[in-house]
Amino acid sequence: MEDLEILEGRLARALAAIRPMDQEGPAAARRHWDAVAKPLNGLGQLEEVIARMAGTAPLKREVRKCVVPFCADNGVVAEGVTQTDSSVTAVVAGNMLTGAASVCCMGRVAGAAVLPVDAGMLTEVPGMRSIKVSRGTANLAGEPAMTRRQCLAVLLAGLELAGELAEEFDILAAGEMGIGNTTTSSAVAAALLGRPASEMTGKGAGLSDEGLRRKIEVIDRALARHRPEPGDPVDVISKVGGYDIAAMTGFYLGCALHRVPAVMDGFISTVAALAAVRLCPAAGDALIASHLSAEPGAGHVMEALGLRPLLRLGMALGEGTGAVSVMPLIDMALRVYFDMPSFDNAGIEAYQPL
Image 1 (tube, one colour):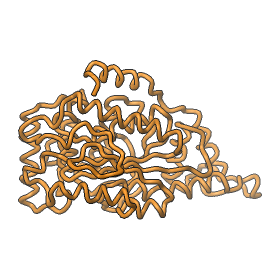
Image 2 (cartoon, rainbow, N blue to C red):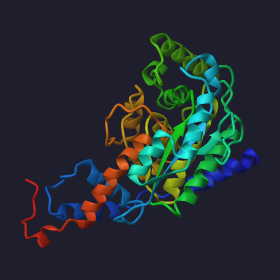
Image 3 (cartoon, rainbow, N blue to C red):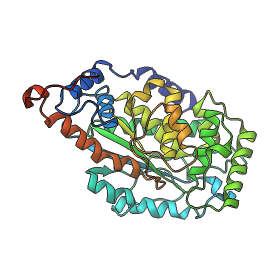
Image 4 (cartoon, rainbow, N blue to C red):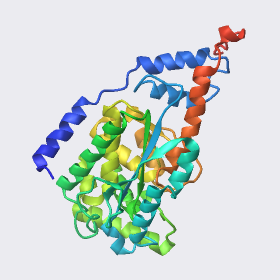
């Protein structure tokens, strides 16, 4: 692992290289939508999604899609904040590798490749790509989840992976798998937004009311003990976050740097996106909101990002399944964009705003 000073410098250079969205691309896409022989704004938010995509790269009729689930374990599981133990992380990660996980089943329908990545699992899954620097985080209830050096190393690995995949795919998405990561994401969200843990924390994968109270207490104690600095997302993630969050934060920054649209998944994914935007506001231009998670803090995070999710299905599965769910919608919108005739070609008088 590189020295902290080198890692800080690499991140600073990457952040400085991220450019805001090209405004002419979205403007031209909106003009094209208005010329298509259909009611104005007939496809609603889908039209705006396509317009946002036009700000990162030239639009294509058919797009190549890939979702990257970052898998990691969290030491906070020792506090009894989850229904299952950390062994489940490796089981689901292995299913991703063999194509048996939920995101893989959905990805085959959506035409999306699935690339699971070990960002910090306790166990090894043979054949899985790895960017990890340690086997899981420390227990944030008693000590910082990771060092700043470890956080930056994984964040930058996620950033580099986005750049690598941007050469092959037109749309990227990040997902996650890791028992305990609704605890870490709630802690990071509470720190970044300055909201109490009780507002940002839900039952995750089936906690009881008593389990939820314990989870909130653990987060409150961790925030009070470590005092993460809201103005420094790397400090927040390193103290109360997880390696999956660090990797996804870097991944979103890499998508923005390499001008490829990034579809967010659920709560954990959007918390990482918020950290990325806090590091570099221009990174938000590359983001597409897929769905609104069932976690209580999801709406607060989405509001802070200034984005509207396409779907509200009460999903709480993770893995990238929400992101994959909107990919067929994007495909259909692109076909309308490219294949529908204009009002002139259809011989229809154009709609005009009244």
